[in-house]
Image (cartoon, rainbow, N blue to C red):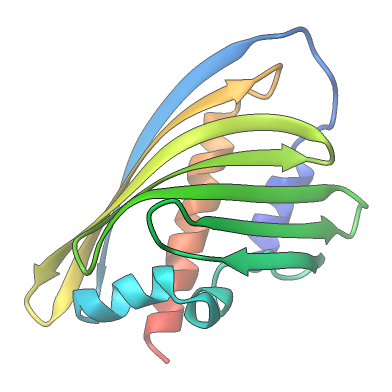
Length: 167
């Protein structure tokens, strides 16, 4: 699975294009066999999130910081085996324990900002588990208009989250 994340990162060519913006949205749902409290923790606790939110094979971590509270920030920066550096830089706006997380984030490849997104996680009790709903609205910038690769990469990360919850 991490190899697929690596492939998504390599598929993005670091080419500077004319200024443009393309909008894209997606909604993903998962059912996890863990209560909302545990799923919320996996998304807001730095150690728990580090277990699944990473690049995998071909990725070297350069920086990781997380302060999951309204106004807090999260940053993940790493270098791919091609030399390309990716940066996830987020700001949290709303956290209701075990119910929702609302944040924005920028993605950069090397020094190039490729997107700005608004993302919302909703946690709903589902028997002994959790029904997780992620909705994301993105502005893809200056020639990077592949919202489909963002959705595929996010699907892979949600799969990794599910595996971490089974441990």
